[in-house]
Image (tube, rainbow, N blue to C red; front, side):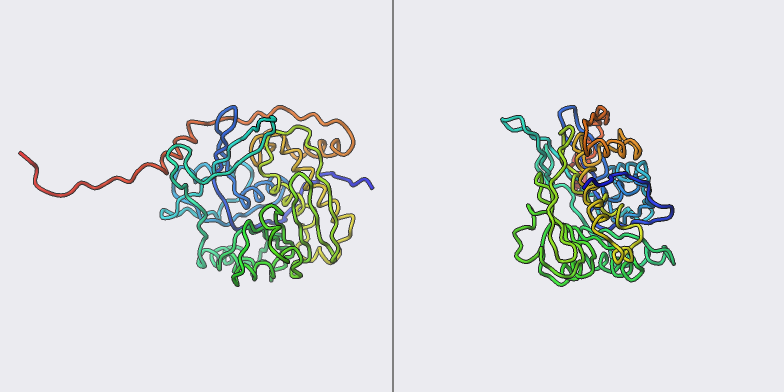
Length: 358
């Protein structure tokens, strides 16, 4: 059955809130380095803003050059960054993405958290604290998100997740690692949708069969994904990318596309959910992923395409030839180099006090 992949703009007033990994991506590509706001949470919130949502990430980043780039890039995407707090004691996470081409000419990407020059560890994720979470709740007042997305677990993130769920939000949890501690288990029990990668978490016994979430999604890379809804698993093959340059961010587009279709009515929408709508949500997410693979970076297509043009391309993807516009993303190697060097520069050693020599 043919599924309508029309990409309608989000309804007026719908709110998406996210908590977790917001970072600066430094993308090392053939045509030079690029910088962009990234991290799973950062990308999902930016994509939802691009789709018309009022998007509110909650994160703690540093008072540094990297944070300036992150906030500038998210703001340009339409994201409301009021809850992205800048902290002088917590440097902004930085992720290096390298394009790799094997002997057969196949392109792939690798992430690293070490400086390409000196090998020093780059800053990593640091969670916000309980007072930050309470400040968000107080600031929101009677307004509540329709969707709450989180990809990391901490006591403060769980505080926000419980508040959002109690207020009627649809919760999606997308972990990158597994833990058997109580906080992780609480996150699984709280969420309505659990999304995870087979490559990262497929080895965890019984994880895919956990009964807490109403929907479970296991991504299978180039083989597509499988989704459990109403206790039945269904596998969906991936769309063939019209042009393949970079698969980074494919999972983020899939998550955002699915939430865009099924999340606008919050958790209440799950009660009336029907199979055609579930299938549309999955296929829209997969189609957005395929389109973005034709551009450099986790959100490269956003620099070239608007929602209307993307919607047209999704319809073409179903049954005809798709011709993507050129990737016109700008390189900014000097900025990337300066930000990394600022992080890696050795601390100044104070001079020992003493008498001057004659």
